[in-house]
Structure formats: structure tokens, C-alpha cells
Length: 100
View (tube, rainbow, N blue to C red):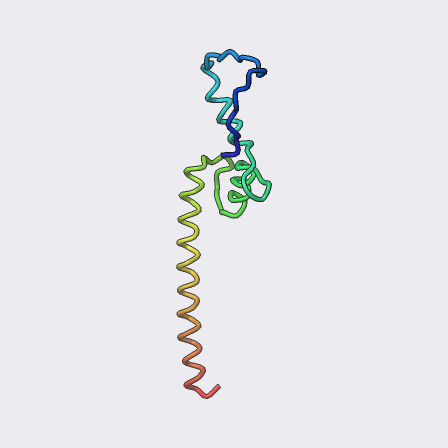
């Protein structure tokens, strides 16, 4: 994404390619976690922020489970808003009928 293609020049030194070590994918994963995404916050920081917004009993939660709980919580909040709107409609129309 932000990498520039290397241009070979006669003065550029030749580099040897290294074999990938078995731990290279783990190092890459850790580097991706620390990579900053929009707003200057890392992915792990954003997951922690999301975790603080969602009521949960478990202190340690996997991202997949956090996303599912977030979706469930959003559905719950939408339902609460819907019920409160209906209550306002019901009691608001009652007050209008009573001349208040």
C-alpha cells in the first residue's frame, strides 16, 4: 500500500534473500497489530475502546466474540429505541386527546 517499488541501479548492492523462519508469520501478525490505522490509534487500541463500550462479563474476549457481542448490543439498543418511540407515540397521543 505505501511501499515504493525499488529501481535497480548499477550502483545498488545485491541483496541475498533470506528463508522465512517458522516464526515470521507470528512476527508479521504482531506488526499488523501495532500498525496504526486512521486517527493514530492501533488496532488493539481500537479493540480496547470497543470493549469498553460493550457490557461484557469476560475480561478477556477474542475479537470475533467482541464483534458478535457488539452486533447483539446494537440490536438491543435499536429495540430499546423502538419501544421508547412507541411509548412516546402512545402517551403523546393520549395527552393530545386529553387537551393537555
